[in-house]
Image (cartoon, rainbow, N blue to C red; front, side, top):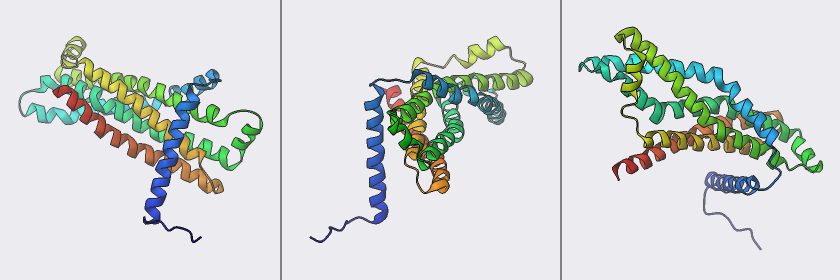
Amino acid sequence: MPRSRSLLSPGVDRFLAAVGDGSEFVVRFFGSFWRPPWHVREVIRQCFEVGVRSLPLISLTGFITGIVFTKQSRPSLAAFGATSWLPSLITLALVRSLAPLVTALVCTGRVGSSIGAELGSMKVTEQIEAMEVSAINPFKYLVVTRTLATTLMVPVLTIYCCFVGLTGSFLNVAGNEAQSLQAFVKSGFAQISFLDLWSSVAKSFIFGFTIGIIACYQGFHASKGTEGVGRAANASVVLAMFAVFIEEVLIVQVIHWLRSV
């Protein structure tokens, strides 16, 4: 019988096939997550790689974000004689959006590319197939542990980024308005609600899972030698950043709806 021809373009066919494979990959993750063994030692090692080794970059990025955002916001508020609102404005911005988003983007560039390249290298050198021969489930050992580590560590790094950003903002405010730390904290957190804190943490968990699962998927499906490793690392960063921005827009809409209810 003649082979049926698709009514869709090859590009659409490839996109739909990738969506199907990615969905199957996510379902496989949740199916493997609940079954032993859990490789606790490897999870802890990956948490160290994702969390502790990201601290210097998160510290620098968060601190600069706090200072720059404060300096850029001051002229606009000063035009209305409202520079006393700076702590509240910066705290709201960091807690609600800046800290989770900055942390996710930094981790995407540092962690996502590393995971994609590492698993991609293992794939093209047939180390993953060797693990299967050794009676080790490579998906469980490589994918589940790394995705779990990013899911757990990104929220922790987000809280740390928020703290560092507020420290940078306070130093700028104290140097220009001579405001005390107690007054800064009291003014800054006056408008913060439980929904703000909950949404920021929940958003960070989603971002962390997205970064981990996309990087693992790209590395696990790498091909064509060293060129495929580079493509896997690049695709891990690009696709994870794109997904994080899409999730940010959707989550903001959901939070806005919850505020209005």
